[in-house]
Length: 94
Image (tube, rainbow, N blue to C red):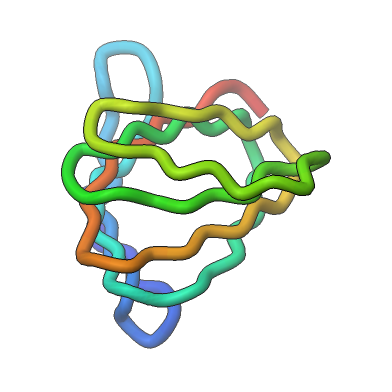
């Protein structure tokens, strides 16, 4: 396992390997963040909520506990976090 810190420690994740895919589990503190993908990402909110602007969309959508979204490889997506939020993310093939 490896601990990853982003945005001055406001986003922290632990990388792991599931039975089929690499994954991270992490926490985001309140703030606005932009992420880039190298692989297909499937992100599931475990606790809290994420307001997300997906590639090709003009509308922000809020994802709550147990909801998930996907972002294709080679894309950027924006996230607004209003409360501490935990997530689980799996990474598909490059």
